[in-house]
Image (tube, rainbow, N blue to C red):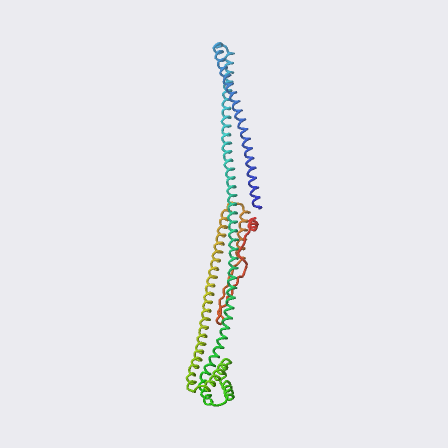
Length: 401
């Protein structure tokens, strides 16, 4: 604001000097008019003197004709000649004065032309400087608006990425819980598989022992079944199934012959083997599904890391371009400031220092850390420092002033 006031004061001083020059020109014109009037008056006097001289010459000629032999006439003629010579000398002096006035008038015209050219040049320079400053102000305001818009876009992008990261973290936690649950089920299935293998090995021998004691009573059968359960460490489901099998076998042995019962036993054993095989297949499928989920999660983490790296590189390039354009514009202002006064140059240098400090004061840093923990992935996303530089119109005007 102070600089604009000084510029207006400078323009006002130029207008005052222009008015003074106009007054001086008018004064010179009045003097020139007076000189021209004086020259006209002197020319009139000269013409009058010439007419008088001509009249006197005629009169002298008449006197000479009339008083040829008179000394008085000769003396009069001598006086008239002296007067004629004096008039001639005065005429020469008047001509010289007229030439001198004409030269002064020409010099005054040249001086007036130079002053008008100087005034027009100063006025044009002032207008050009004002227009240049206005264009600079408009360009910088546009740059500030674009920087503000880009800052808002960056904030929205950061919010979107934060939401995406939170969603991925939630998925990671769910995946970890699923993996832990699957591992627990895997351990239980392995224990059941080991128990089933042991029971499948002991089952034929126990059946043979039971068949040897098939003529015993129902009480003996129940006690023998309890003994088999204690030896084989069966599960609750297996114990219930074997109980039902032994009860059915006892009934069948009481009703049918032993050959039919022996024919049905391989079928029961094949059922148990099919059940064990089915459990193994289910365990294998759960393992493959968990592995595929872990691979998909790792792929998503890699894509997220690539996207964040690309965003970081784009932000760095954009900041480098902004800094380069700012420094280039400041250099142009410094080059233009060579024709200004020293105070204007100091103001430009102050603006440059403030812009560089603002650029260096607001760093932008993204850290993306992807690490493997057992079979799961964890993502850490950190933004440190403040947001990009925001220049408002008031801030920019205060920097200029």
